[in-house]
Length: 114
Length: 218
Image 1 (cartoon, rainbow over the protein chains, first blue to last red):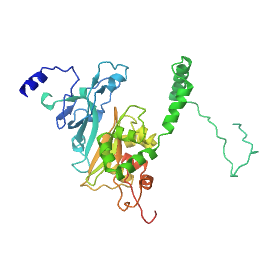
Image 2: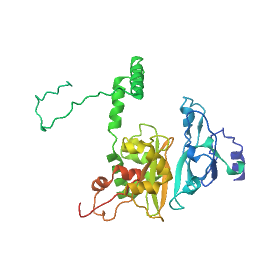
Image 3: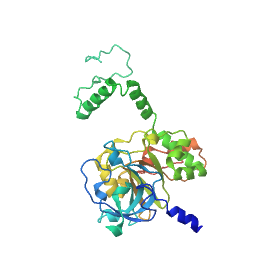
């Protein structure tokens, strides 16, 4: 068993090959403002949430795809859960109400690194 | 069509009406679409047949497909669990293809959770199973308000969700599309799959209304 584990840890995956985040992880959405095509709505930048699910299979970064650049840019999308009260301080409704959105990996940050 | 619209053909109606013509100048995007289409055809990158074929693909997608999926999920627990596990392969079981290469997450409404879908950036929509989105879905008031005040938006559709029920708004942006699996209405135990499908409307699969059943009217 330990020999198997040792062998497995010696395998180095390529960048973007394995998901950076797992279900339940806390994440912060990046606040950058790129010029051009983007898929990260402005109202969610800088907000905190949790990974609800890793979307199975790697996919092209839609922002790159918008410029016809697909090669080598595959990565993971995540279904991220964000409480409405985190997005809108004046939210009217239940404190349990929430938003779900799919976010490409390069928009997500680990809160302890921020 | 002639300007005169002389009524020498048989008409079931006798009121006057303006001849049906397009008098407006084409807009910027109309001209761009025509120019790009003509260039693609001229350079043989695309044929008129392919364009017609794609229009046929789009025209074949209507909310009736989504309703069939919902009714199957209501009547077949195994199918429902497969559908919730992977929306796309679930729909493909019923012969619904995903020509736009999107994935599908089916969101189940329960007594504790009500789902609503929106695309704040543009008009992402589960077209393979529902066809084209309604105009209001594509316009800014819905796109902005669905994520900011979903309960007020739902009230305007006549849908009142109690405060102890969680509202989940799914904003589609990239490769995933969403379809709401509404709750099966009470009193429909005697209905078969086809009769159930008749109850399921487009708006219920977007999540702005719930599926109703009026036994008296049925």
